[in-house]
Length: 214
Image (tube, rainbow, N blue to C red):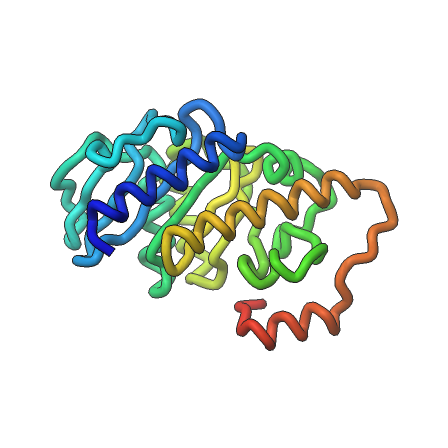
């Protein structure tokens, strides 16, 4: 995909998420590799509802900024995924309400943040790792992701929001939307005797779709 088309797609998908209330105000950030190994990133303080394709922060393959506005303060978080996952071509971070709400519950499994409610969250996310709270912009967030050694395509930052890496920008957006939808379902079912997927059903999905499940 050409850089111009990628810029337009990033801004279109970001606006779609903003318009549907998945992240508000100037929260959230998005990035994607370019054909030549460079990087396009949403600028700091920008709104997903009004990203300008021409103003996206542009880095070359050596990591030097060559155009656009100053990048998001969460650059280290994005870089951590690119540095540890060879398959990562795009990264999306939101401040979506239901996933943040779930991150505040005391009985959530930090090694498997989402309950196995549907096959789709397993297919698109694998196991989501819940990381502790870090101050926004703290480089320790990136360090925590690097500490996972590329074993997770998705993490949940407690009291902050989800972050997902994927093979292209559309896949990253679809996966993070699945994360938020599953978190929403879990909150709707809170306290109810929900029938979760069985271990056999989970194993079947993992094997059939070649899901990372550690």
